[in-house]
Length: 257
Image (cartoon, rainbow, N blue to C red; front, side, top):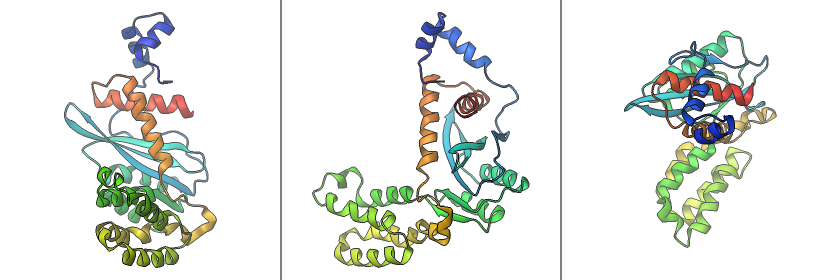
């Protein structure tokens, strides 16, 4: 689980790479399967959580891994692997569990997926939903022209402006005032400013309760998803959805428990 290739594991264990693979398979819990909610350790107090999803294609069929992570401990606390592309089903399963355990969630940091937003409204309507600023900036980047934009001379001037609008203020009013000035100064980038007009208030939800220290981005769980992806590449692919979630769970338990 440390990122070694199967061949390197075989050399370390003095066996063939296929024997190393079979040993990894034996580490998996057969009770873990697709569609089953898996819980690591639910903290007694968990005011802030990250929510995110990662997509997989297995035998040309879509699957999605849904994960909730405790902001304070930076550990995943619950996850579920479901067929189909990202829907609200996975978020419903996780938030319903947290609600049934009387876990008081005061803030949720995530992207702006419609199903996720609907699930939060149903299970934790009183929670502050902080939209990840990095995801908003990604959308702005696409509207600016992506890589083609970064090659222009003015990009060095405009991109810091966009970042400042989303990340550079501690209150929505100041960010909105600055946005208005920049729209006048750079009218050519009206498509990018339109994104900010629509999303800006959601990226400043953290100011509703500054004592919670709500992160502006969900980069922590994004990094975790990237870690999972790298480890799965080490495993050289999986044959079934159940095998995928068992390996993912083995990786998480090895790293965090």
